[in-house]
Length: 203
Image (cartoon, rainbow, N blue to C red; front, side, top):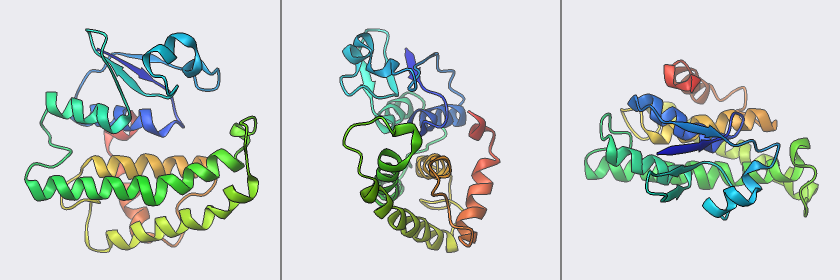
């Protein structure tokens, strides 16, 4: 298999790198440069018509796109340590928090990114006012997660999971975009310091 990767600050490929590192999976990879628009090249679009990274190409040519789908595939191949949960309730809780990260935080963050950041200035249809209007939504999302860590060490329960990976990579990307975690979100920042100290965070 071959993992089509993009370096930081791209958050979605990093999710998979951290996940693979936590499991000790050696994932052969090929770098796709987003600044050079390699993800929009015809050869890449033939593999993923959405023109986004990451993708995982299997030995038979089958392509899996979307970071969570890739991680689920790898989890099925390498079930230990279980990062999507084991018991039915654990699995449901991890999925619930995954959805919350992507819907509550990632959606407004993506609007700030696309509509306000200098890196995306050439994209058509930019609306600076709409992008700025999403900054308070990003802050509100971070405050929601800060409150969630008041009684737990990890996002989905007592154990580190893919939900922590999603939140960590999104929080780090938010810092790059310019709307990172509020300074007074002490519980969130303590959690972030803890997961950032894991060796996998360097992946």
